[in-house]
Length: 182
Image (cartoon, rainbow, N blue to C red; front, side):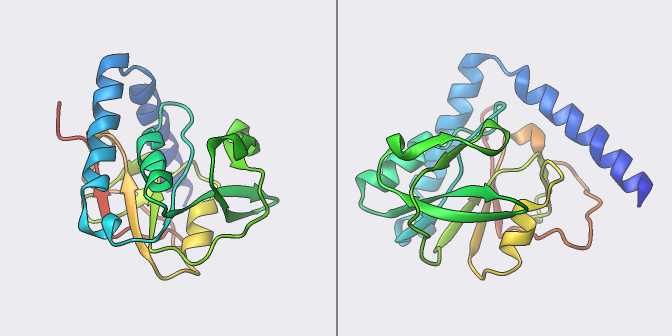
């Protein structure tokens, strides 16, 4: 287990560095492409309740998708970390966010979200088969193991790796959306 942790920490550090070194134009272009891929998908268009996230540290910025949700009258929910748990709360406006755990914007509302049709999941590395690693705290894995819904991982194409050594508690995703433009 120690070797797995060391390998994952090296991979996490490399991916974080690659994300931070993206130039602004590529970052914006990649974000636009990933958001539009989801917005134009059947699964998203048939969804009424969408769980998403607010990005930090050059994660894929999902603001366009979140705005689309609100404009189309979908229920948009974002995570809030309380202690060791993560719960999703609905928002109807971006003004209902404030910085919380790890300075990530979180809902200030207390409207616990209904069951999602899809969950948009951030990560540091993914495989094409849907394996995922995050920052290592396990919030998404703990949350997703108790919910049966369609899980979409989002990342830049350099975040796709051939193989990931997963922990037994890691939850696989149904699909991964990346940018195709290089």
